[in-house]
Image (cartoon, rainbow, N blue to C red; front, side, top):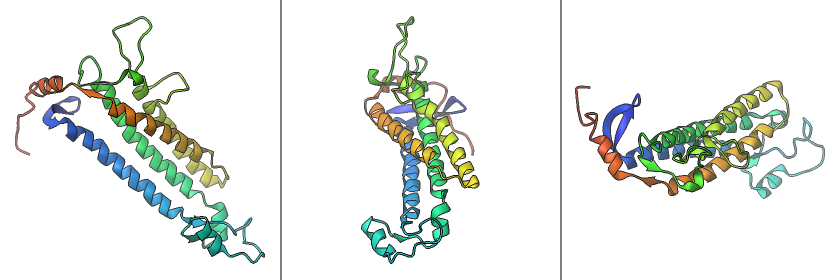
Length: 223
């Protein structure tokens, strides 16, 4: 399916709809590798560090680490009990992922509008208007005032808040993990809702092709 590609919200060059969608695949693929890299650095077991300087009990830290599925024990007990950079790093990766999800949802909102009509989102992810029956609002992609439904773009700001908050906690050596858990829950909820929203999306190939024929999209010039 052919569609116009946009720069500065103006018709740029003709592209395939698959080309546009694959851009977000590669963004999310990089996010996936970031979480994988983080997991490698979190693969050390702190058990046995005790409060600060280890324990007098004759424990086998290598055994407990392996038994619990870690790559091995941590090397320094002080670092083990005070380190929180894994939380900061996770929140940074989550914020990056949210940036990509927010960008995707912003374009879905634009392309589903009456002015574009490139796509149609399923009614499962939209709401109507109380006084404007012609409207179909993409609330899940954009925002939703009801707290029982995730709203992807609105959660983007929450992710960056968690990122900054966790960095401040590390600086102050405050032992709290709440922002990390909040980021995990919110990110999983958003990924869980974006996946079926994309799967049930319909593309108006006739509309995208007609738009690509306008605005001299196939014009070319020197680089």
